[in-house]
Image (cartoon, rainbow, N blue to C red; front, side, top):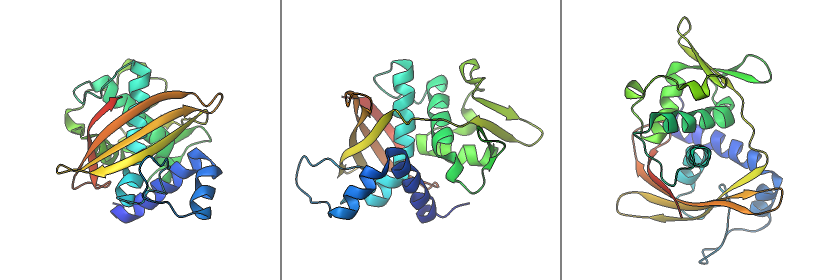
Length: 212
């Protein structure tokens, strides 16, 4: 299994790639200040940097799932919503896991244990997660013979996911962020996510995510 520091670096790299070169360029040109209200993307966070980088793919995946279902709050008991969020994580960031394997340019093969590791970031018990919903049948399938999942690679190039602020709380970490349409720069959603430390590959799990 990956060490937490290694997976954080890989997922941070994937997230920066999905955001485009602008976020990286801004980070290289000027060190971020601690002024209130400053906007910054993952990879340029002055506090709790590792946690923000590591958990951004999970938050991104849940946010996209919520928008897909028209939900204002992440309900971990909703298996269809959890599977949608898990698929988003795997399809957008799974290729950065050394245990993954491309079958062709559009499909990724992931061992069941890898999928289980990613589900832990959603605070989901994989063993208790229901079967794959029919709505995902054309995007993710399970092969019992190899105990692996075939995932259609995702593409979120039309939007920009940003973390705007992070703060430490008694229970863990709270992130505030937004999803922007690159076509017209409209804000599609603004969210607040609560994270708590966990003994998993990511170091944290999402314990709440709401649109604000």
